[in-house]
Length: 79
Image (cartoon, rainbow, N blue to C red; front, side, top):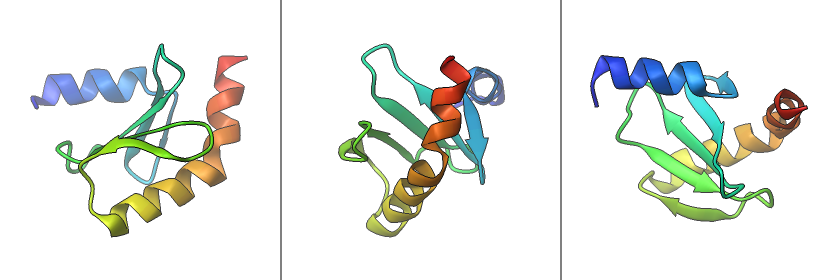
């Protein structure tokens, strides 16, 4: 992924927490990208269930916890 593509993702993210860009997709799922390692991504639903990912289990648990703590801010941005 090019630097320009990463910048676009970061600019369009609803929130960025600890280097992870959180974006709400049109289908309602939440897409989370590790900006330091853009080959690591996860898609979750609002119940924090993993829809798809290529992250290892440790990073998954970290990102799910970040999502739990910050989901309200993602929702507030939509208001």
